[in-house]
Each structure stands twice: as C-alpha cells, then as structure tokens.
Amino acid sequence: MTQALSGKVALVTGGSSGIGLAIARAFVQAGASVFITGRRHAELDKAVAEIGGEVFAIAADSSRLDDLDRVFATIRERKGVLDIVVANAGILEKAPIGSFTEEHFDRLFSINVKGLVFTVQKGLSLMPDGASVILMSSTVAGKGMGQNSLYAATKAAIRNFARGWIVDLKDRRIRVNVISPGPIDTPGLASGAPDEATAKAMYERMKTAIPAGRLGQPEDIANTAVFLASDAASFINGADIQVDGGWAQI
Image 1: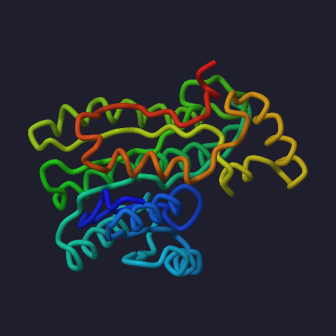
Image 2: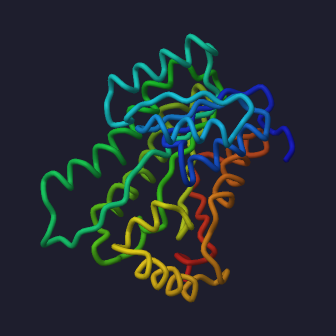
C-alpha cells in the first residue's frame, strides 16, 4: 500500500475488531499514527499486537463523554494534533416495533448517535484546517427491513450530520464523509443471528441478493477509508459512499 497517509495522526473508534480494526491496520500501513478505542482491554491488546507499527490503544466507551475527554487528552499529550477521525464505534441490536424497550432505544442511540456526535465535536480542537472526518453509517439506513428500524434510524441520522457539518466546518476546510457498508463479514454481522447455523444461512441468502456475488470484507471498507482520508479525496465532501457490492442499489 502507498504511504497516502504518511505523517498523519488518526483516531478510529471501535478499532479493536471488525471494520474498525481493518481501518486502523490500513491506516498504519499507509503511514499514519493511529489511536484506537474499544471497551475491552483484552481485545485492544490483541488488536495492537496484530496491527503492529505506530498504534496506540485507549480503553473507552464512546457513549461516555468523560471517556471521550480522556481519549482526546491522551492524543493531545502524545501527538498534539489529529488529522483524521473515523467515528466507527457502534452496535447492532434487532427488535420489531412491538418489542422495543426504553433500554434498547437508549442503548442504540447513545452508542451509535450520541457517541459519534461527541467524538467529532470533542476532536475539533485538535484538528487542523483541512482535516478529514469519516462517519460510519450503513446501507440499511435506506432500506426497510424487519426488526431493524431502530438500528437503521441511528444510521440514517449519521447521513444528515455529514450534510450539516460540512457547512458548519467549511471555513476550516474540514471534510466530512460517510461510508455506508453493506453486508460485511464481521462479528457484528454474525451477532444478528442467534446461532452459527442461522448465521450461515443468513450469509447465503445475502450472497444471492448481492450483485457482486459475495459478502464484503472489512478490507473493502478500509480501502475506502484510506482513500477518503487522503489528499486524493480532497474534493469529496459530504458524500455517502456505499460499499455494498450493489446490495442496496437494486
């Protein structure tokens, strides 16, 4: 991989597994120094060992503002600047409207929406003019799917944040773009099924519905993130890049 991000400092929330881990790895390979966050120390330690290079782990829950304050204080102390923010941390929980609980609602919106908003807001003081922000949404934001409406609503909100924030930040030339993955082969996707056999059947159904003929891999998202974070994407702003093998396009 080219050194498209050489000398840059990046934060990837939810960077200890799945898509976040792949993005952090790709950023390091592209020359960046990368901070990753996650809630579990063991997974963070494993991710650091797997990624190698200049990567730093900070145990934090993105939905807790005091945790975010600690994340950015650490970045300020170690690097003093933050060129790239990837607000990736999120959870998938399914339920039909008749089964919603207040706890379910609050958990999804707290992690997927509140955490993303304040990750970006609190990072602004460290971002130089021309920095790049990448928000992780999902193609389900534009699809009607049973048991998925709350999750989809959290992801739809993200698309509109990007539209508003590019106006708020235009004087600083900070670009804000969205990546909307389709079905990606990660532990998060598997968590939507109650057991391994059901997950396997779900994967096979998805493959037949994807024009590309396969599930996406975390590296498919990581490659897109490297591009959006780099100077090669300097005129891409406020976009929603759907990386889904055509799943949501037909």
